[in-house]
Amino acid sequence: MATQEEKKIVLERLKRMPPTLKLSIGSYGSFSRAQIIEQIENDTEIGELFVSMHMKYLRSFKEEIVND
Amino acid sequence: MTNRKHFLLTTPNHDDTVGYLAESCKQVIEFAKSKSFDIANLNSKKATKKELEKRLKKHDSKFVMLNGHGDIDSVTGYNNEVLIKCGEKINLMKNRIVYALSCFSLSKLGKECVKKGTIAYAGYTFPFMFYFDPSRSATPAKDKIAQSFFVAANMVPVSLLKGQSISEAVKRSRREYDNQIEKWKVSSSPDSEWVVSALLNDKTALDFEGKADAKI
Image (tube, rainbow over all chains, first blue to last red; front, side, top):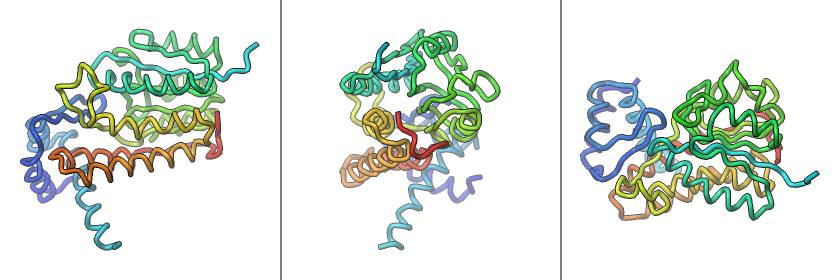
């Protein structure tokens, strides 16, 4: 389960996401930036999936620095 | 009696997501033709359970690629009709190699299939995601963002069609995900962060069950 801190980090990053981009998540549908933000703020399953995915990506930078 | 191998795939196209999957399969189909495979493409409204059973009975395809929405225990076709599900029709996949470009299905369905006689099953353990440019949704082939995902995802069937084992096919697909990630990382595109995070998600979710040395 995503922590409040993680949600806050991802919501802040989402301010930089181009509004022209859309994300397809299988049978859940396709989501614009505004829709992703809404899902996170409403603590939905989609919101959790997105935060989890993006936090893994952000953590991957830390691993790159440690392994260099 | 033909010695040509048979490749069956489902390509429903009833919404944007599966429309992109279907479009991306055109290249896989062309590649299969170049390798002299006989092909049954259950496209659009033909991607049904009835048609799948009928064609598998007729052709006994060694390699089956299922494109469509999925869950941990099922993969669907046109209008989200369930094609195979844990406990139902899994025997359709017996003695075959399966690749499901579908969310979640490897986590339970794939394992069940292998227990019931599928030689190997490659797929995704959590949602397959991709970013796309909505202004290109009518012409997915021109969507450079979405193409990055499908070039990597379709490396599994392309490698299998080349005669690679399933473990090698999955490795090659993961390497292609890495190539796409590097390409976007060095790009100055504002889309980069988002595309890379989803590519990383998909690379991590991709795996297989069954015999590692399974070949078509």
